[in-house]
Length: 235
Image (cartoon, rainbow, N blue to C red; front, top):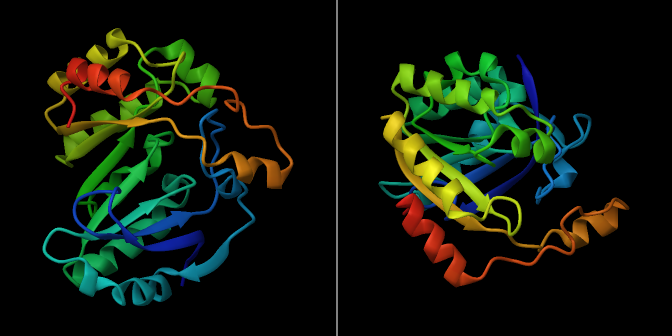
């Protein structure tokens, strides 16, 4: 029986896909995004070891909250690093009629195809819209999430594009318009969500004894967010 490593479970999530959802945060991430809110999930050796069967049983306790639109979202860390485990979990959940969503950076598309077979929705974090910024601020080449998006298109998996807006890094109308073009190019993209950069994670970095790269970066003004949402035609 294969096992996976999870960091935590949020039992009542309302911003990680449609409806009310239980959110599983997986342990381990190869990226070092400058805006990361969960540095405690980076290590591959942390967290709690569990089987897909055990985790499914825990998640079924929350199904009374899901209603007709909710379900389970697996986030990170980066869930694609444990794609086989997540596929096993999603297969079990679907047997119980529970909607499954994958919140991912798409950084390892080569591991995703069989997982998408049991994924009802992808929340794909397109962090920047130019290759240089993508590599500089995440450590990942932009071609990887784009390859993941091509895979979602081939498998017919619905995608919501998400991007955290960081002043000075990706807060231009040109960048937002490139997201709008991406939606035109890929029919699998149902919506674009622009999310404001927040610094609530600063205490986590302090407690871990590591610097937060964006400690002195301001949070975006509401007027900027509205302007960019208009440019991206975002929900």
